[in-house]
Image (cartoon, rainbow over all chains, first blue to last red; front, top):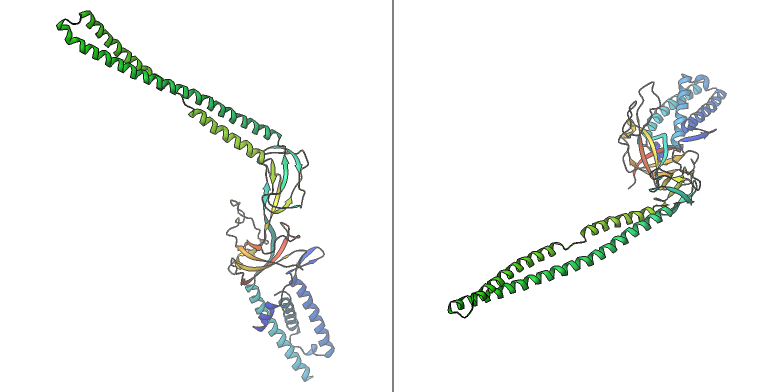
Length: 78
Length: 341
């Protein structure tokens, strides 16, 4: 619930971005940032060796990406 | 190695749990604050249309110019309308003069009728005198104080007086009926005065003024263009009536109420969000494939599955008159549920 109220208070960016003359929904930007975040986390996990011991890594990284995307979106746009 | 397995498990659980939690939170947020990219900026506008036809002799506006209500926009050649007004004035003056003249004639006729009425009185008194004379003389005939000749004269006098009374009465009635009046002229004057007022109005209408505060759009007239009565010349956007029309899915409409506050981002000016209040929830659109009677047409933007119909929701903008507001500009709208009042 605190997460929800945070999301509702923090937010005033436009829901569309102008990228090279076309308007893209801002959630696409959030998704790209989420991919970058997951890529960084994965490289850290590979370096520390945790990656090898992750159970079902595909699902975990997918969930990580979803969570990162939604978190950025909620904070940025709400 | 054992530590890493445990850490991996923790990371996996946290990732999956936070993903699920954030999905739920996002759905709640979207449900609480419906939003759409399918929106555009709109304003009411007036087609500036002349009421009289004529050549345009002065232009005081150009495209994008901001004008205030009552400002002069165009001047149509007033000369023909000035002449028509003079004509109407002359018509009114002529009728007024004719009414004065006829009024004097009617007065004269009235005096004649009064004289005829007095003539009737005189004839009546004459008759009474003749009657009395006869009545006095008749008893004297038996005693021999008057002759039969005198009685006959008196009787004749009485009959003549009676005939004169009848004639005078008829003349008086005739004179009374012959009195004229000015009613038909007065009716004509009313008509002429209406024509005069109409001519004056036409002359005023040669000056075309702004009906609202707003901006001039679609102006493409040069001096000398002929303005035709009833044909719009250009458009004036009402600067006090800017809206964002957001096509919300019908599934979102349940959560929208008139009076809800909304934020609007106009494309290209995302840094300056505008605020507004929901004013209309769109009572109808033209059904797909049907031409409705004056209903807005809103496309469903995909049709390979049955896509929700979108309805135009009108958000009245609190701060109108932003320089970047243009009819048809793309916008995003997000509604929050805090009521405006």
